[in-house]
Image 1 (tube, rainbow, N blue to C red):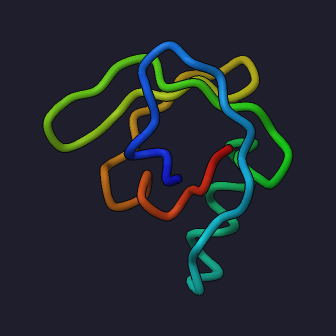
Image 2: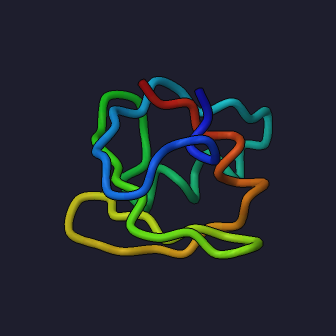
Length: 71
């Protein structure tokens, strides 16, 4: 399932990043978003969601959330 389909307030483990864009992969890695790391959807908005990764909170758009697979 993608992060876009994830429930608010539930912790997930990142399975993989589904992107061929190296710049995007590097950006997500710099946030701490990589395979095996935990991620929580804090809240949802119409075009984005707020996630908690490690000790930070970030707002990511739905297209980026679609690229993150979680279990």
